[in-house]
Length: 156
Image (cartoon, rainbow, N blue to C red; front, side, top):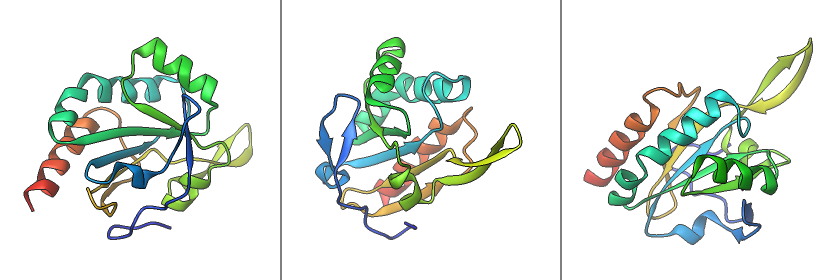
């Protein structure tokens, strides 16, 4: 599991546009990597739209926002278009990225347990090193916390 001080993995990820990227492609920029359970659900929509609404503030701080969920590229495309999201969404169908980052947890539905996403955000510095982790994120007010943390990281 990736912790503060660890380098991000270098493997290829698939975006909502079907493009292959690696987190290391963003060298020189701060990455806000946020894991969310599912496209078009109330909490996830609120969270994504909150990042959208403050997108310019993140850009001013040289930060790139990347959302991650198990949804398909098609689902991500629809979600982005519906809510006018200006950032990439990563397909993590097998939960591999979420597992590597420790952004999974056991959940229960209809009496059955399953491995789901623990809403989490990771701040990665310009050198690809994890600087801050937010676990069990509460959607309301979260983007403000992330912006403040970026300011603290860049002042160090």
